[in-house]
Length: 166
Length: 186
Picture 1 (cartoon, rainbow over the protein chains, first blue to last red):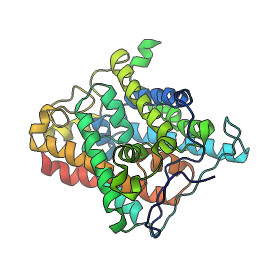
Picture 2: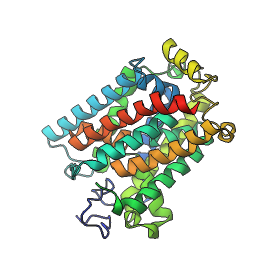
Picture 3: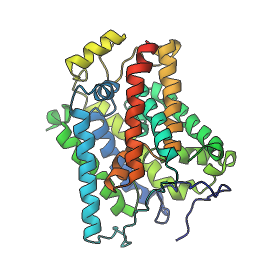
Picture 4: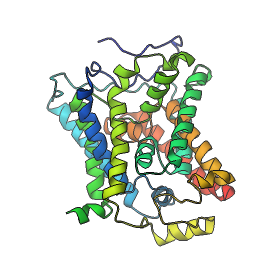
């Protein structure tokens, strides 16, 4: 299947294709399940306080188990589910085989350098991209500005990407 | 029942439910859970000509993910409007003491209003937190090729070494801010 992403003019660098293996949705109705799942996840972000700057600080100070419990059990359940899907060769609801493209390691620079930068931003704002959206929905208008600055950061990365080591 | 939902959800309920998003998205259409891709999709939608990185069919690649993000907004609204019964976030006494020593005074909401609010934007710590913090999240997620969801959940769940490196780096970056930048900022 054709990759919908134009890989551009920098063949030396592996561009992470946005996670799209299947064809795009044909109508707004096809997007509804994702919207509904998003509502559920937004509720979890809010009610488990994953989006609280205070909880993130508590995590980075190793003073409570809560965040480690949430993130650890989430990763564990996700890993177990993926292993079961693979073990039993489960197909998607549309009948396509489940396909998970591995991430290219390259030199690995992008993962530690980008990770350091992202982690710093996570600790300052006390939130990552998913929570930005939920916090905006909860009425905290300042996170509209945080989101705009994050878009500026992503845009800047897109501009300087050819000159960065990956 | 509603009262129970209003209480903060314990980690052993919220964590497993959150983890189920990964297999659900795979089953719905081979989608890999990763929220920061939306930042790229929005750039691709608004300014596709500005870089090769943003020149692709964002509707096809990211329509589902943007729908998910709209769901986050709706979920945040629902939780704040009808399920808000918890009061201040019940962080540990030690964290609260540390943050008071740092200069945080407002513990009433999900985030400290003395750092993260429209009013606090006029102060240096507030402006740095909002503008620099947001920028670092976007730039870092782009560079690292994922964020807490893409690397921390999907990447770890599919046993990807790059994601393990990224998650360790997230933590080192966060610790540096917590113990070096925040004390300087306040």
